[in-house]
Length: 293
Image 1: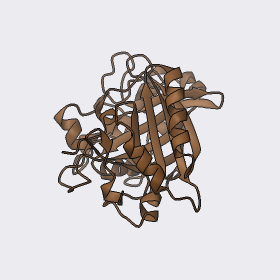
Image 2: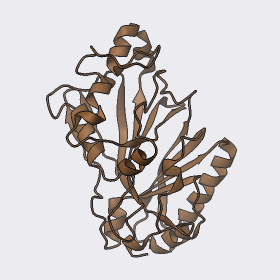
Image 3: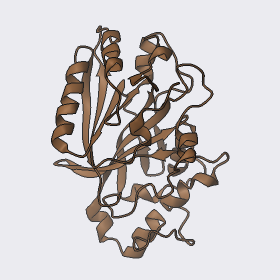
Image 4: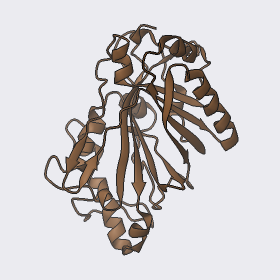
């Protein structure tokens, strides 16, 4: 029986490293992918495969596509689609460094690392703005239903789709705003995390309220803050049984429905974005039969 990669459903770790790879032209990715599948699967590594890589192997995964570029009034969503994604998870930054380096060496013959972001858990799971991230995340069976493919057939059941975006915050601008204005941008009071009934239509909570879509747009968020010499922000990660729920939220955030843009864009912007398919696991190893491996 195929099961999800365990790191998808596990709690957000203390530290992580996100790696995005592009395929090396004229290099054969199959031996490298076989080596990756031979690795013992655990919750310290989650692997996602991009649509270009799948297509290059002469295969297709139903529902797998590149992240779309979107624009709205005063906002842009870039697509920087990568071929392979690795989320290295753990509690010790040194161990994560060595684990990530080992993954890079394993993939090196066929893939180049194009993007690397180090994430960390802030307090009980806060964004760097101080607001709680993923308050209405589904849990238990609801998380499985939202994030994991069921009924897709052999090689697909137990898999997941993940959307990743690197968001850059302007925390100085945000901190300079009055507290009630900050609460209205998010749609919650920072003091008790309660949703504001009278928040404006642009509030992030209202733009992304999962139950307000038809059908309901549930995703399993596993985002983490990041900060380095270039700035700081949020590495947004959302797993789903398809990309549909995430995509309808993204379209509403950018004002595609009603020209109302999410208040998040007042102080934050995405600078990268990709979609990946996360294969299932069987007998402790990735199952890549759906892509012919």
